[in-house]
Figure 1 (cartoon, helix red, strand yellow):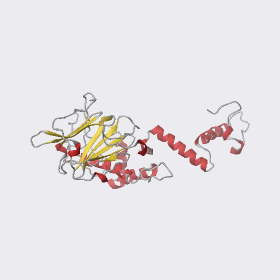
Figure 2: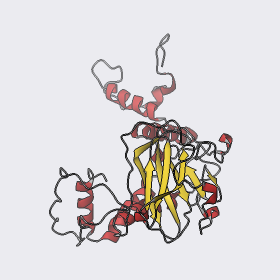
Figure 3: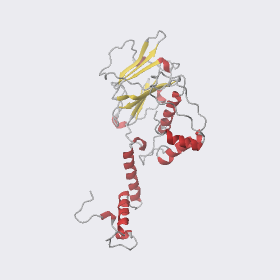
Figure 4: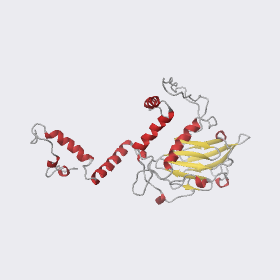
Length: 329
């Protein structure tokens, strides 16, 4: 969890006084300044397909909901070098911090072992995935840009892959599971009454992932959900597992939404959109506006033939402002 924005956010929270107005500020910002609440339509590339924005919001909410739940998956003990909890800020609503004894249910799985190049042909106590019979229907699970089978569904964006999987028993707890995520492999094991581990799934992933940026959570009575950070940004998967159910590459919606771009890319896209809108309205583009600002400053400069007169844009041809023989590139 990143705390670099805690200062400004605490200021906003103190100003709001209560949590609900604070959430209004956050979501209102997304509504006014991003395409988060804009439905995707056929005549524009901005916005989200139906249900995707809600799914992203719920995904983050469930992550922190599980972190605050006592029935959680085990996590490595915190480092002794972790900074102490800062004192409460006067004027803020009373929010009781979680005790250190509460263990979060979403656990990044990090490994220092070498990347395996193959999966053991017959892992001990392995059980083929076809025999896993969950009590939940996978057909209703999100599989945008992915696929769905009897036992699991998967979806993807340009940066991550989400896997939802049915388990043998809806009463399984997070503490009953052992999830091992490696750069090219996934292993899911279930603890038995005799402390032995039953392998539910051991598969080679379609492509590289970042284990330290990946996490899992158990939605009791629903599914096991694993979120993988792709090792290669923008590389689209055609299957969840090597040799598994595949999808056609041309069926993938490669549209990238504004929030998925970096700051520089987002600024470039916004500039192109502004220029297009200006041209449609017969107005100057951003480059022409910048050029005009420079000319305004030079209009009354020393030695200018226009010095002492009022600036008149009609006397300037911004679309051909280069002298003969010069290039605008």
